[in-house]
Image (tube, rainbow, N blue to C red; front, side):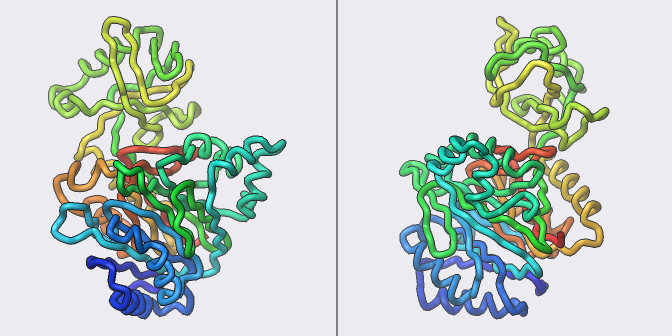
Length: 403
């Protein structure tokens, strides 16, 4: 079905300048809008050496006012996911979007800029000067980052302080892991480090959907002793004992599903009377020591924090994404959706679900038809509660909507 605000396309061949030029022209011709506000491009390794030339082709023949993207080993195009080893080459993905009344501002960020902003007297004001965007002028951010060499945790901490309460959605590029080779793109530039961020303002907002693929098990507890990434006690009991008691309190079927699939969830807000799916920041359970009674987790827990164990498997991941999308559909009732970006963890896809295009299909079933483009990521970015976080095993969706 033709969409008035966007078009996405998938190129499956190798580099062919004349063929690509014609393909991009035909893609642009499918969009009746007078201007392309935003172009997104995602490339697999066979295009790495010609990335700068490719960007120029899309800018000229797709007539994109702003073009951004990154490298990846697998792509999202519409309702399909193209993974390496599939029947169709992952190739190249392009999305062209017409966003009425949008004010977009894009910047490439680097580690030296993190240092400069951190050293400033007013760190947040330094970020506002660097990006040219104040919190009042922005409805959300799309972010694509290079996982190699980019100090992502430090950036996320500074970013949350500079733009409090504003959603930031995106992911980390993938590429050649052995060579630590990945790229982020902005207009005609190919960057081997840092991140590209795009502010959405004016009449267009970014609506986030973050599915961590988990459901709570047992009950919520309070951490009573923690040190670094170790949880020593929960509710004044050894943390390991609370984990075992939680497992023993499950039905036999639940126990079967939980085996090897246990994670920890930290409440996004301590003020909710009732915690449910989506209210937790999910992190890995790294180690459980029965002798010491200690759990090691992929986070820095603190005493007094609310914790609840979580289960993650294919069924739960499907339930969670469906539930998150249904909530979003209710929340957006009456507001136009112009298109979106979908970032999928490389641990999902056919490897987790046993079928192709699982996440993209669910998005289209619940919210479509949408011009959807994106990629598989080496880590995802999205909000839980009022703060943005770095995630794994997550599907993160940024919808371009009416403000």
